[in-house]
Length: 244
Image (cartoon, rainbow, N blue to C red; front, side, top):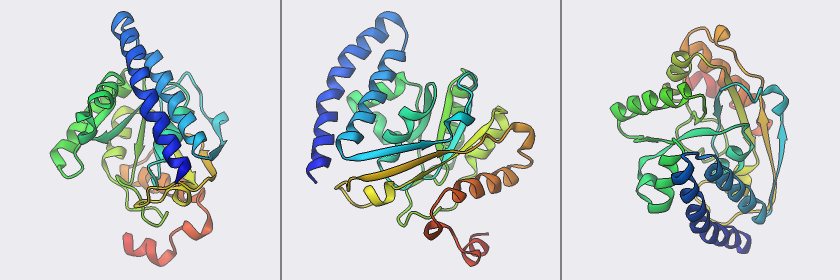
């Protein structure tokens, strides 16, 4: 609990300072890169203060000069501040539209070309995919939590179809990512963080010519992400047949 409070206190103190410096520079220069670097440094530092250390695997698969759509599992609120700072070059993400109402955070997310999404509105979901396509067209990466919400037990939930529509429309490589350990450190429904290790795996990119159909791409991405999970968190054959 103490480490969690330290992390949140650090973010509460650092965010206004970063906003003051970062927004001022962005407005003067028109360049959001400083604000983004300050955000990613703050996110990474906060997680470290909470006692979570991260092992990153597979970054050698990624060409920093290319744009990708990163698709990942989601088990904890710790996932974004761990993953986003470790993705080469700037990435956008889809986030709950409610967060855009937060004064400092909302302004920062708009400036950073993040994409708001209303999970309960199908038409709004289509709009989010369209907005994400525009972000990728600008040359940014896109990071998507393909389950659409956090898993309670660390196992993969059913995937949303929108990200795979986006991938086939954009025609850029898809990088499956697996994050392991955040479900232990801070599972859904718990406030306190347990210090411990987290593993972040960047799997080899799936090139557009290897996509096949959207359904085929979804199956490929799911199989790759799940291959990085511990055996206890992989779905049994019976569970896969039920979800199908």
